[in-house]
Amino acid sequence: MKKILIVEDEITLSDSLEFAFKKEGFQTLASHDGEDALDSFKSFHPDLIILDLMLPKMSGEDVCREIRKLGEVPIIVLSAKDSETDKVVAFELGADDFVTKPFNLREVIARTRRLIRRTGHPASKGEKEMLSIGPLSLDAAKHEAKAGGQVLDLTPKEFLLLQLLMENAGRVMTPEIILDRIWGHDYYGSSKAVNVYIKKLRAKLCEHGGLIRNIRGVGYKLEVSHH
Image 1: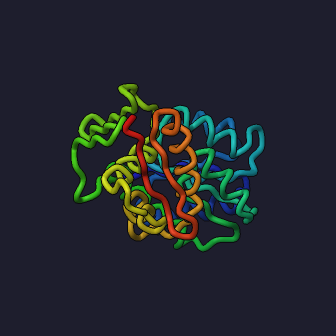
Image 2: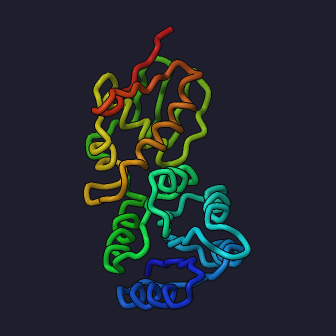
């Protein structure tokens, strides 16, 4: 039975989410403030977290930041704010999806199922175990990527993104293809997540001669210096 940690200070909404998830066969635990959410995360070991950003004691942003230091459990952010800036900030903190209030419970459950299904099964069908391009090398079996012989400190999604770009070096990958291959073909969240992860990966690669080029209006491609 998959476990869902629901972090929401509106008790009525929290109860509704708990009821809906239990009905769908999930085990749930609810936290109503940020500090309790962190304690619950450590003791409950959830498979996914539903996280409201407006929380007492500790903000949802801080909770997300702290959880990301501890692990890669999928996080769906709930927010009454709907600006592109809010979404980008959430993804930069490490959120996997962003749902605007008010929302449809069925949609949240559907997104939850997709993210949980995706976790631990991210490999693309045609992937190669070992990849080497210029100063970059990647070992899928060891889940290790290097640039100029140095091991890169990558999150699981950054690793998958680099793997996808290396498999298709020189080819333009659209945000839609990246979402499909890394988040899953039935994921229908924001492509802003792709922009955020590209930016993070680009920063880690650029000093080692790896360049992710932005092809305006089309997508991204990996170019490497062989010097």
